[in-house]
Length: 171
Image (cartoon, rainbow, N blue to C red; front, side, top):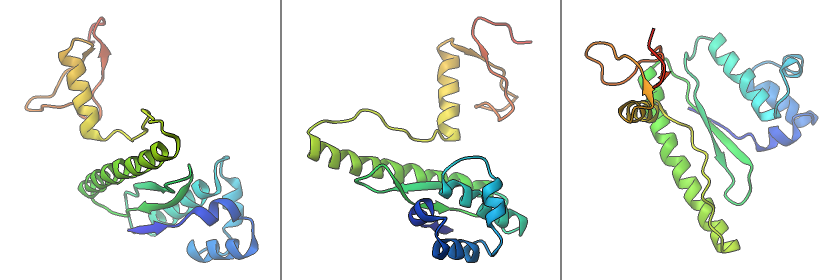
């Protein structure tokens, strides 16, 4: 588990002191050309890609899910928690924890916003988990909106399951 405090990297990756720290963090003092070759994005996203590539290259992890921890009073990422694992089950456990952390973070930001403005927001962006997606697909199938076949002895679609609108024929 890594706690990648990205706030200063995102804002100051070009500063020599920060750049030197990033090189030590990535165990690559010559990280700058690879960083600059990445497609546009925030400095934090680009350093995170380089970090994940280094971890995979070293064989330390197959899966590297992460999630952002936001500053409660600002729409800005303070840090990211990153899990490095070879276990698909570990990823599901990590995502379950992520869901709880994001809900709590949303609740805290919502309470602050409501206290400051007196207005409540109804919008919440939370990643969809595999279990949520399966439930949504099964509910839409039951409602007649989607069509798909399930393999024998399976109660939910598998990753390769083809989905069709209800008005089309399954080939």
